[in-house]
Length: 145
Image (cartoon, rainbow, N blue to C red):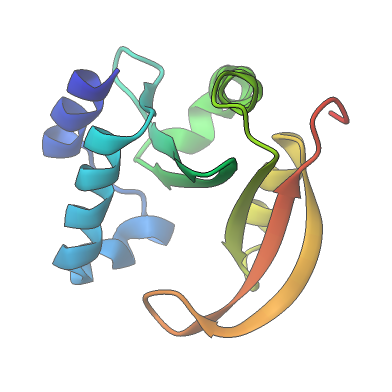
């Protein structure tokens, strides 16, 4: 799916809560590199509103995700797709740990993580990430959705 993700990067319009990423060109370039080097997806494949992927090394994975305009209207369509992808990637990649970090202030992002099958593990981790904000750590619980 890498070609679709890279194409989507060129036309994708980040929704307001993720638009801060545009202030960090190096972050957007890192996401492009991750999309090339690791499994990544544009969901849905036609007119995507989510770009996501799994960076993995030695059995551990980290989920990344950015949302685009129109995401709120297509949540019910995207959630089962992303949930299935995460479960599939967990198995195919032979992961023993899959995690993601969420802005501690964003309840919507924490709710999304839980709907995907992640469980709160730790937080807040002080001044983590590109904007030095507090982040919470969620870990995937295979089969506990």
